Length: 192
Image (cartoon, rainbow, N blue to C red):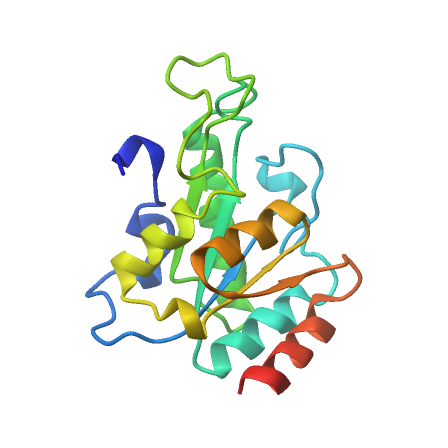
């Protein structure tokens, strides 16, 4: 898989991902971004539009305290559509990581796909191996961080999120948009 098809946020955007990757396979939580962690405002990239979904800060803190590595996997086709730049997205992701830390959690890494079927930026059209429902972002993070996918969990608000998690071999949960903390409690009661 080429790096162009699987870009990952560089460590300086999520300060806590500096250092060595985990050395033994362990389970992780893979979270969709828009509509699952943060309010989906339609191609959200401005920091001033950042807002957690109900229960998200509490949920990621619970996952962190339970010992899960936390990853975000997000389709960001707005880049391919020319709506915002990759740098705009990195700024938003840096803010997301800082806000997560303020709430007692750490996001280990963020993977994103900037491809879109209607992309106007050359090289950003689909098909690709990373745009959900394809599992490329999850598989890439699992390889990089030595994650046990059979013991890992994906949570997302769209069927494409669930399909990507299933294709990667994870336990999957579809978030209904109501309260992520309530879903986190359920997930942890089953998997911990």
